[in-house]
Image 1 (cartoon, helix red, strand yellow):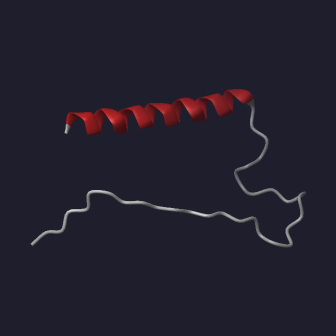
Image 2: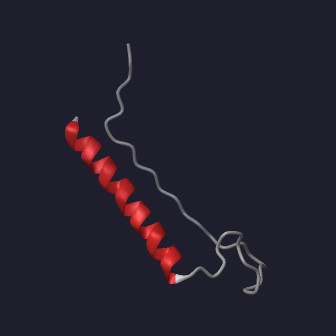
Length: 58
């Protein structure tokens, strides 16, 4: 008998690593231009709209 999951709640807590200096950078978090930032936001919005559209078709 299959089990159907109707809701899934995920909670995540992110803490900074203790003892790290503020001069260290996380890989991939370097200074990006405003154009790069806007393109990432646009891609995220597009993916969210696709997900919403797929859910409404069900």
